[in-house]
Amino acid sequence: MGFEGINLTEHTGSEVRADVATLLRPEVAANLRKLLIERGMLLFRELNISDEDQVALAGLLGTVRQEGEKGIFKVTLDNRANMQALYLRGSFLWHMDGTHDTVPVFGSLLSGRVLSEEGGDTLFANSYAAYEALPQAMKDRIADLRAVHSFAVSMTNAGVERTPETEAHWASIPDQTHALVWGHKSGRKSLVIGCHASHVVGMERDESDALLAELMDWITQPRFVYRHKWTVGDMLIWDNTGVLHKADAYPIGSGRMMHRTTLMGEEAFA
Ligand code: OGA
Ligand code: MN
Image: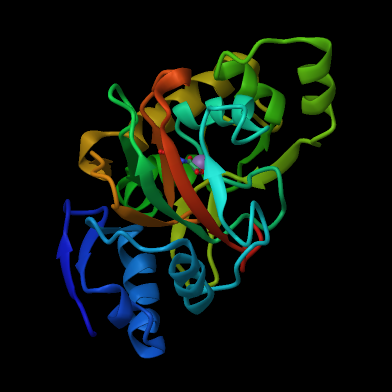
């Protein structure tokens, strides 16, 4: 393997112990990728990886998405550092990244550079494990359902103010319809759900709201969740296709600054 992996909870997350030079060996990175897909997220405590090495590691795990500066996107609510700060408020609610695309991002690497004194933990819920544990009756009920995912719905749920500017931006991102149960090429299944899920296609609104709420309650049960309390220098990697994630709310002026590198998607939603 080239590293030690320790389960953080029964279903979600492994802590990996190894230094940066070891992680950057291609055969070690290949093992990391396997563990990531198996466990949903990986934690590297106080790794203190440089931006360059983070992008290099990402390149060994998949294909780096060109965003931010040289593959480093600054996740912060501080508008001076990131013009999209307003939209990051959506990260305070359980979500998957990229539900507005047909091929969602595979995963992300996130390093903690400046932390908030209040809030700012990052939480992960294992959607593969949650699906697997559903009662058979629920699996049968949702097997062929599809849901509409909407940027406007996620922004409204996140409490972002409606103005002519925000509404115009929301309207520029088309809704997407995805199967509620994603049958992956690997044969595993996960739920496609989150604050962006607007409604189930062809279902009465009340029934649809109740079903989506029930599934959200199910997947976010403590037994499927890992909560990360950050120390500066920690790095997390998550498999966005198999876990939901969110940040605990933190104040706009907290200075919280995370450096993210995103891996391009490899598999379309079903
Ligand atoms: C993200 C995200 C959570 C956090 O970068 O996609 O949701 O804790 N981040 O900053
Ligand atoms: Mn996110």
